[in-house]
Picture: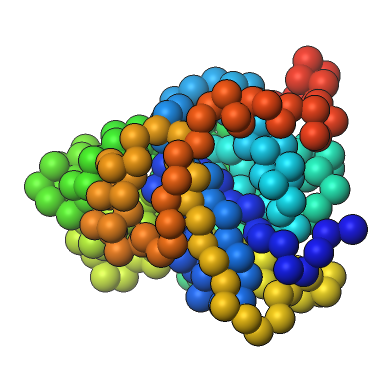
Length: 283
Ligand code: DGL
């Protein structure tokens, strides 16, 4: 049985999931947070979904071995690739970022046409399009693979970002009134995207909605931490200085940053019953 004092595990391919970590830190002020930034293997978005699912399984197993009480998949690509199958096998509560984003967009759209921006993996898996269309809204979806390296490079606000945004968004339908930022890196581009879409389009950042869902979910199962001083730790598989630099530039760095070797990640395999990848449909 998970323990309320144990940390919440959170992961993404890089700094993008820090948008979710920051929102979690706000709504859960007493919870220890253990964040894995898998920058050695970024980007997830242009890799095959089965590979991303294997990464997600490995990180989940590692975090479980570290004793987390719950897991937040702070990555749309990994959520699209690994959920809900991963959640079924883990034995602790698991939340992704896709469902909260869909719910927020459905609540926000006035005219019933929603845009989705995401990685090649997320858009290719129809992770957002399928539930939105089932709910009866029209969907315009665009994969934006250059956005993630722009954010990781720390140039989210300048000319390069604006040019790339124009490249991806110039042919969008005029009736899109709500746009899901379907990659946890994209809130870093908020000024660029706001300028590109103009003031009337609602931009849905699922970080806040996901954090609210997690806070409610933990409280419902009696796993919210009691008042105390908490810790935030970042474990990073790639270059630490780059991670620190980008996360600080975004204003998203709280807590200590330490290295995590990929071999250490792999050593926890077996903590979670392995998925039958051949039998599982790619979701
Ligand atoms: N931030 C991640 C997402 O939400 C992954 C970006 C990437 O590694 O391509 O999809």
